[in-house]
Length: 153
Image 1 (cartoon, one colour):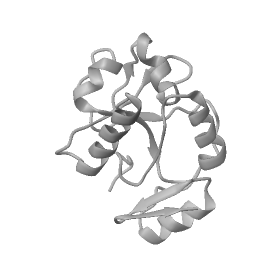
Image 2 (cartoon, rainbow, N blue to C red):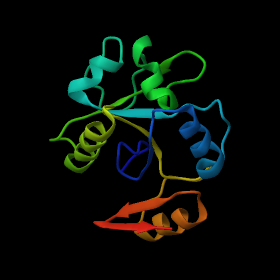
Image 3 (cartoon, rainbow, N blue to C red):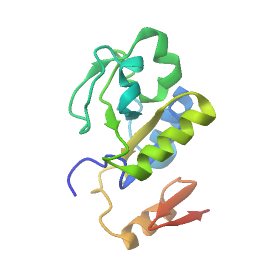
Image 4 (cartoon, rainbow, N blue to C red):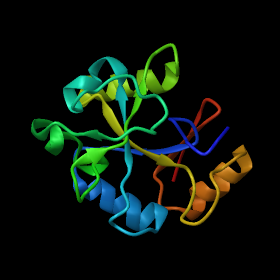
């Protein structure tokens, strides 16, 4: 528990286009376009994407995104300054989320996902399966993975 989703109780999206950021802001979180999202990245590849990239598992440090990688993770970069507040992920820290990042990398070549907390604008982060299901149906989400199940609209 705590204020950061860190891959659990998270809304995740493809980080490769700014349209992903726009969709999550407008149709999912109902918030202003200038508000940035955070990228989750396989820890061993953090230095490929971030200047001085290193272990940063709690999304509390800001890094400059390497200019040559900005287009690859456009939705997860602060739109005004090219920085990001990444969460690095290891297999031992969060095996399921690591496998998801690794599979996304196998498919797209990008070991990064856009990550934001699972809550609607101005609401607290979800704290129970019942709240997660309720919020899922009231928000513009496509799918919900919860307790080993996949729910799709």
